[in-house]
Length: 236
Image (cartoon, rainbow, N blue to C red):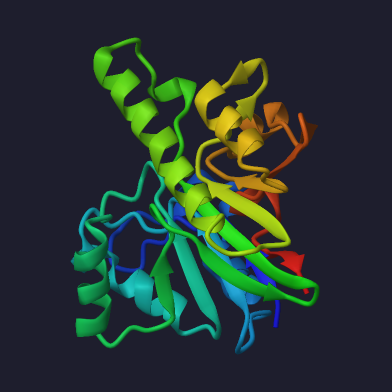
């Protein structure tokens, strides 16, 4: 049994938007993902912090769900900025059930538990917010505040049980270069998060990614191309 994380798969099994067109590390990415995901075994948990599928509806994302479900273990999905297929939790769950897809759940306003060797570990998360989405409007303020509330709801759910560690999974980087998303970072620090895993960054933007400890929280970038399309082991 093991806990893994991997963000930004950008699957396009049901739509014509392969990432190979970007070249570089993305060339042949589906074969790389198949090889990387082959490490999964029954009893494992894989958390995926956003940008799972290019489909713009659940039906367009169906083949991507089938691709993921073909690998063993439990998969927990967090919403990313490109996950336009994302719907209400009830609708997403009904869709998967109707199509005979199991082992996939959604980390959204909730918390999951992973049973590590030294005790239960809390898995929390939300999409987050980023400066590239912020244009100084009231709508931006509302969206940022909403994401902070969702993160706090997830972290509060973790407090209902005794956890030895709290891991958080967000799509947008809470810290990037000189940018800090204050509300998200404050929630992480106040919530006692051990490590925050994030994605969204690709190519040259990874050079400005913050990876390290800030005010007690460890931050780590786990977008596919930044980690060689290999799920990152968090807990054995």
